Image 1 (cartoon, one colour):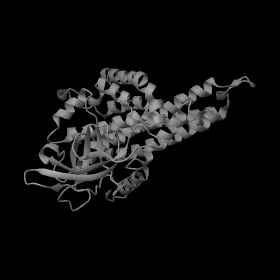
Image 2 (cartoon, one colour):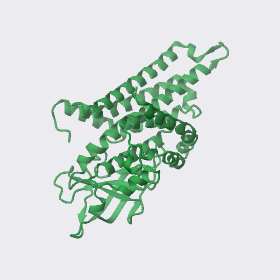
Image 3 (cartoon, one colour):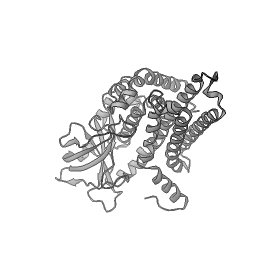
Image 4 (tube, one colour):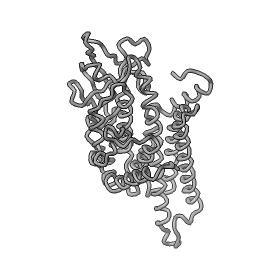
Length: 386
């Protein structure tokens, strides 16, 4: 349904093989130990996939959102934590690419698997309102030096990423959305991970809090946006990949749950009745629902990609919708899988309980499901979203 070219299909097929042979073997350990999937990210980097969206001129593969979603779906089928880390990397790279002065070094390093990026937007003071940082940049000298201090929460790949797109209020801000985005490196002085990550699902993300303590940087070298235009870059550069890739992650979880459920129902028996679980019509019906809901989500995602690529008037609305649709679908599909497979799903040997937990992360990841419902409703009523 992604309607890819032969070259793009080959790229997705290679990604599928990497996910199957080099990511899947680590997925259970990553989940159980709540550890960062370093081997999986190395596999993606070695294959040049950290540069999937980076232009050829920087050594990347120069692919758009359609291929990105197809690749992320393949990764998510095997390990949703790895897919989430990869998604946040691509969002960080999107900011690099949208900058008027592009950070050439990090882009070239990412293209060869030597630079992992992420976003550092959310803060304790504004919680899920990631677009409204409470930290504020201050000017320390007249020659373009800026001082950053911030406490960030839920930074995916905290302490592992090489580059962080850090948001703060613009120094002259009069409204919360007048913000700045700066590129901060892991080795910069005053950068530290200030907490641990131990979660219900997506346990390998290492989405821990981080602190930026009095970091002085050159604005001309590190600013990714124009003065006070950080919010605009968030909407233009990060919203499309963030929303659509979240949907692709949910889709991958759905496909994994469908496959595991189908395998269990067709291979497990009532020995005393000489029948299989799939001989029960109610279980077949639940499996059919899972298939229908998953296919419906895929059609919704592809329709959103079509609208975005053709700059349709409703593209922004569809980008708002797709994360809600995907998250709610993944929750419903994995719930059906748990019920269809019963006690076998409740244990860990089918993998379904991991899909069940991972599916729920999207609903609380900002913009949350409730926030998106409100945004969609406000837009339909002709009201400002922010």
